[in-house]
Length: 336
Image (cartoon, rainbow, N blue to C red; front, side, top):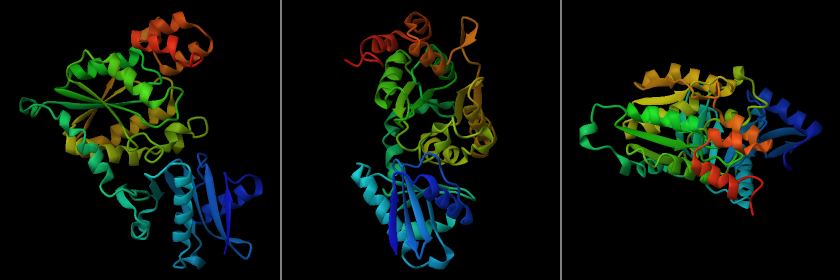
């Protein structure tokens, strides 16, 4: 069989791949960076794609099941990921493929009726969450609220501070998870450090990275494709299950806080799905009204717009001092 690669495929080759995936019950993902196809006599026998550390859209024609085609596809994708410096990998696939990909060195994280997420580190997510348990609350916090907030903070604003402060008032301990995916205007490490600086005075707040496990390319890719995905297509069920099963349960989290969402339809759909799914895990969702300044809700998108316009005075009103210090010294446009 002939091996074809694309970075990603374009034009007719991409259309052919889209059609092949549809025939096999899959949808082409607009976030794909690299694809590989195995061809036999001018037809596709198998295909797979790479989106950052995530192997996805892996399909094998029924005529080639059991031929080793899937293993060849995965081997090629793992090799390309290694060439890109990606060694901690995830597979996004159908639940019936668990045994197949398990034999190729992947271990299950979470699944539902239609989707299975696996990683190539045995107990990877368990070890990651175990590292957070050093922040376990004192014994007197038993039967009290242990809360969580998951935020991107691109950048950290007074709105985020308002959400975290109000959530912390309702909890013995509040975990603040900052999205680790580097697909935002502000780098992940900077975003997390600004949240740490902006909440340092709150004694019951603990700030952590989400790692690759929450609101990531592996668990919730729609979040990073807001310009191309419609709210009707958003499915955050896998991300919510990973939070509930692997973060909330071992950490004792029983309430998750979100801000009201007047601007972003994808995040709004995510919040609605959390409201539906989290109670199944005995986790409450609490929505906190968004902070308004100058008669308008504070949002990171508003701040980024003001930055593009060079309106630093308006930005100063919406962000804590640590953020302004960063923007005026090392922020976008001031890298030197």
